[in-house]
Image 1 (cartoon, rainbow, N blue to C red):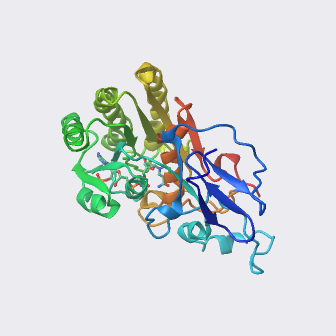
Image 2 (cartoon, protein in one colour):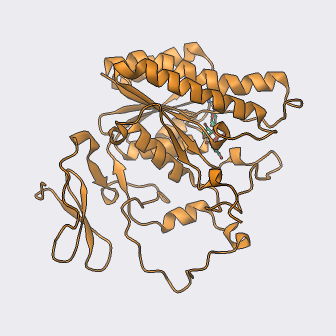
Image 3 (cartoon, protein in one colour):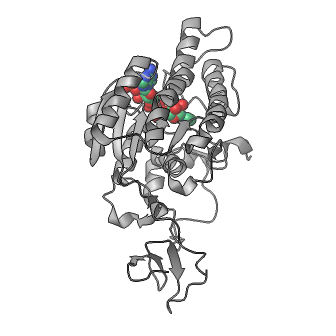
Length: 345
Ligand SMILES: NC(=O)c1ccc[n+]([C@@H]2O[C@H](COP(=O)([O-])OP(=O)(O)OC[C@H]3O[C@@H](n4cnc5c(N)ncnc54)[C@H](OP(=O)(O)O)[C@@H]3O)[C@@H](O)[C@H]2O)c1
């Protein structure tokens, strides 16, 4: 264990986390590490202390947190659903205190649907983790790149257009060199049952959520081969693991996206390209509400009775894209707040 490069993070009391070039350690006041070092991680899997990074307001810091003593106002009894409804996820996320982020320095990531709620958060978080970010969408891409800061550029990309994919990859390579990471995040949702959904809308959902991801993988793979490998993360959904009658198009697209992910994971494995999916539960974004502003899925009875903050889901996606997930390919990572457990009461 290399201690010379260590930095200490204060967590209160006499205990602290020590972050080194290799891994974080928990030590007591005498400096004793109760967990012996299993050996160094590769440099690319190096963990950083979030305190070293310029964070956006509201970015959760939690993976390495130590439980703080509960305030008197935080009773052991779980809050009632009516109270929970008023807890905004971003506030809940702000209460979380310490975290570790993966390091993407020198890596180039292209994020589709960057203008959306999750896409913007992903752009910001990847940039904060040191990546060269290509924020791609049909609108507001320059704005998102500016917000992300660091080495970020905005690129116009309609994921359903093969030509626009070719242009986006060419611009990425021109600016940063070969692509390392692709996040297929863009999506379109239209509510409708098997009988009520207009056929052209069904096709648009499939075209965006499924064909768009196929075109992305097809355009990105040659660039990733030049880089010696890469990671692709498809942003899927609990709708790709369950079904609701009025989400027939969205659910169909997300179930099919799982097949695409697995086929691509097998097909690209020998090129050292990993392909995985992250399946969020309900995120606090416009997609979570119908046109009348009504939640598409009520969450009051779930184990975690609130929508996720985009930052909380972005953390899973960054992990799947990172070298820390290097043993995962063809995997479906669930981040659903217990949605698949069903109602708990
Ligand atoms: N929100 C949720 O509750 C939830 C839950 C589970 C999974 N997800 C998944 O999370 C991902 C992000 O969703 P979100 O909540 O951030 O949605 P969002 O705010 O609606 O963002 C979706 C983005 O996709 C882009 N898009 C739509 N059609 C496109 C096209 N043809 N080409 C390029 N971009 C297109 C839109 O950007 P432009 O119009 O600027 O192109 C939009 O900004 C999606 O894959 C979604 O399925 C969301």
